[in-house]
Amino acid sequence: MNPYEILGVDRDADDDTIKKSYRRLARQYHPDVNPDPDSQERFKEVSAAYEVLSDPQKRRMYDLGGDPMGGGMGGGFAGQGAGFSFTDIMDAFFGGAAAGGGHGPRPRTRRGQDALVRLDVTLAEAAFGTTRELKVDTAVLCSTCHGSGAAAGTRPVTCETCHGRGEVQQVQRSFLGEVRTLRPCAACRGFGEIIPEPCRECAGDGRVRSRRALTVKIPAGVDTGTRVQLTEQGEVGPGGGPAGDLYVEVRVAPHETFTREGNDLLCHVVLPMTAAALGTTIDLPLLEADLESSDPELETSVAFDIRAGTQSGAEQRIRGRGVPSLRSGGRGDVVVTVVVETPARLDERQQELLRELAVLRHEESPDGRVEPAHKSVFGRFKDAFK
Figure: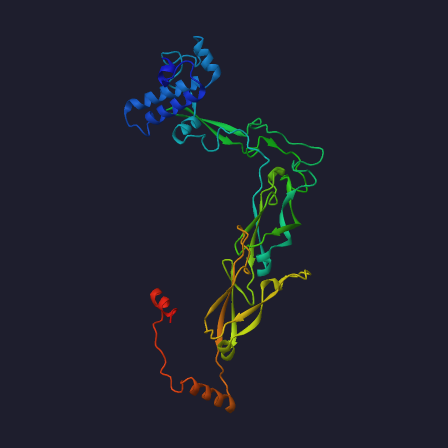
């Protein structure tokens, strides 16, 4: 029987075309998928045909008129009892090599894991940026074996069990014939090599743990949860592999004056009622006051004008004096909420003066004004023109 006809490919078909055809037919005729009694025999033919055409030597022998399987199925290659790789069947159903087989030795040298450290900063440091030194405990390259894992004067040797392949083959007989499975070699753990004399410093891993100092630059505008990436400053990989990345996660400490909301800084100014009624000017500190700077031109406060008649709860903005944006470069605002403080203790003279003021303002017996808790947009718009 002709293996090209069984797989439905031309004689000049390449390996990818043959493999795609085999996967399609294997999915179609596999007994677990197709309950038709004839599918088992058809599946054997497809598997045997693929075994011939996937092996360059067997395929060449067939093309020259020989019997690559030593007799068997009428077309000149074996059917019943023919061996085929279990990984090829897994390829047909899952589109790739079966787990643990067909990959060859796995590399001893691999990339290291990423690492994460947390850094506490002040609000001013988060807003304007800073440079800090960190102490990190990570895996670093072993200075004794330089990542090879072998003791001085020695080197890894080829595994005698798998002969460097990193895999061992097991053959089992089933109703499908001989089923071959590949498993990682237990002797060398799939590396294909064995270290006869491991380095005493790193026990053959090629890396050791060490505490080291790093300098990290925190950009202006970061906030709690922002992560700064330091490329290749994480864990060195097994076998001296390239290091992963180090991520520094920022945590911003609370500030005694300002509360951050986005790029705005919120604060309260408490005033006596006389100052709120008459208006005043106060010296309002800025976040720059927390910076340790010798720059004489650095403005650490601004003159903040309280308009006469300012009500408790009123907000005023100082534009462009908030937190710099991490991406756009602009700055938020300082949002000041005025809190008018009513005096709780008055002497007789103060009470007398307030009563005189109440008479002058016809407020001796005020009825008060009851308003809804939340005005509509139209209502607030109307009040603005009163």
